[in-house]
Amino acid sequence: MTTLLPFNTEFDTFFAKGWRQPVSVKDLAEAGLRCTGSDEVVCDFCRAQLSGWKAGDVPLKRHIKLVSSCEFAKHKRKGKKRKRRSKGLQFDSKPAASNDDSDSDTETEDEILTSEFNRLMTFQDWPLSSPVDKYDLAATGFYCVSPSSNIVRCYACKVEVEDWNLGDRPKKKHQVLKATCPHLRGDENAENVPLGPFEKRQAVNISNHK
Image (tube, rainbow, N blue to C red):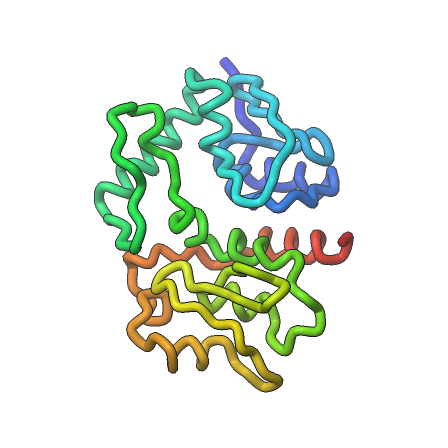
């Protein structure tokens, strides 16, 4: 019987191998994947090997797409489905209806952007000259729409901001424009996933090697 590495050990493999891809090490480890190279991961249960990661990729979705029979990945997917049934997401856009159970765990862009890390990764080309910090923007619910024009949008309420000035505070500006935003209110249905300690470390590594 295949034995998976302890969860924290899987985390360690990403930092030991110098992982700098724009995909959360937390999401990768939770999908049963450990790092074997700068862009390569493997599942110790089904031996699936994946590479070629890009911002917005969902590790569990890619894992199941490659090896749909993986018992570990299927167990994780069932857990996510149960969570969604018990707590419906309330966003402006909804996932397309599908009778194909294998695709029923597909995340919409809105759901992917509930992760603060995923929002932060949209700011990779954010200008250093900007008067507002990308970490503050991501924490306040914003993701980057256009780095060239400083346009950001909130994943939860869809408000857009582009006129940033020195001294602006993203949270305050967000509140002025949309005080009822589910993210700002801490609404459970906003499903915000804050930046964890491993992801903070990962984000710093990515920034330091740009």
